[in-house]
Length: 278
Image (cartoon, rainbow, N blue to C red; front, side, top):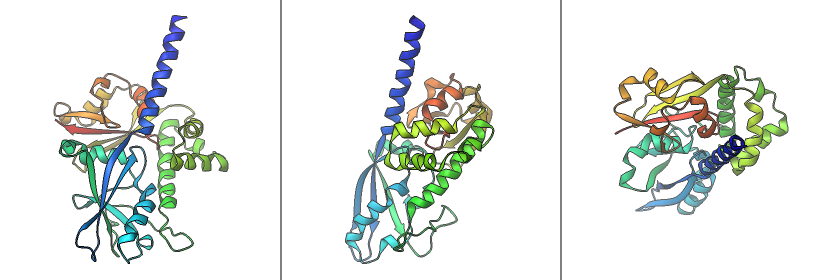
């Protein structure tokens, strides 16, 4: 009886942690330099850590449109941090941890610059080719395509096959996407369970903060966090702390990747780890 109570308590704790991670957000300031204006226009927002910047692009563009005669909705935009285009196909929280968290004591608000130009930086980031019927850039369709591909890749790693996601019904596929856009945790969890039939390996991406270095590998589910860090980036072990979903994961070093992944995986079912130098 006590064992059953302990098991129930653990499940409730995991559920509560997942809710907090799902609702976690960061403060972002988006700036735009408009030629006709003598000052920079600013847009402040909260954005969920496990979301993606293209989800909020239409709202930001709609606001900035009030300050320029240029039809921003027709031009693909992108965001830059310290004059470097950021990869919008990564979750917002991963970008924040990788690019900004080491310097976050300077400010509680992450400042990014929105850019638009006839020359889109395709050498750095994925372009937006899709258009809406009125000619506006269709950011969500491109995001949907990219995220679906990432889910297929992670599904293959986890199950040893991409069949579970390929065999989703059309309704389930639509529900999965809508749950991501509308941020419906219950629906997302329900559909995502159909993708994860069994756990063979864990899809992991390891980033080093402030560096272009990334380690991407399928990891044995029985390996601990410490074991994979020592295996793939041993030189960084004494110099850095592992962060997952913005949380210092040092206390989890002895935990298996499967247990960590169950709780901390992102919407694409990938476990992102960022090493932040002390």
